[in-house]
Length: 84
Image 1: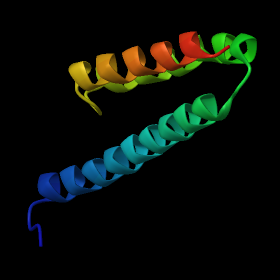
Image 2: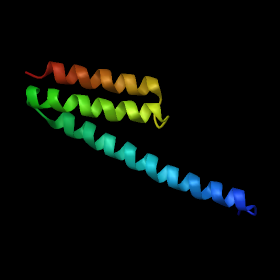
Image 3: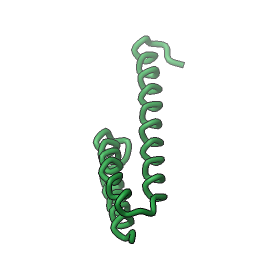
Image 4: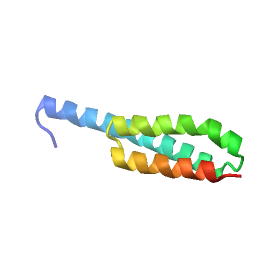
């Protein structure tokens, strides 16, 4: 257990950051899942930019790696473009 007040504060801050990161990550994963479930190309094309923005925000704040973000965005774009 932490003995210094600064260490106790850093533990609190880390916990808050972890909760925030988990929330944003889970929200983005749910948005991706929703996007993949859409079978209409027009609707999926309208939702794609918002999901890509969410992924970019995760990469910008280092919640996920920038290359992983690029791979996810590429795959989503391919899926949306492949819809009939």
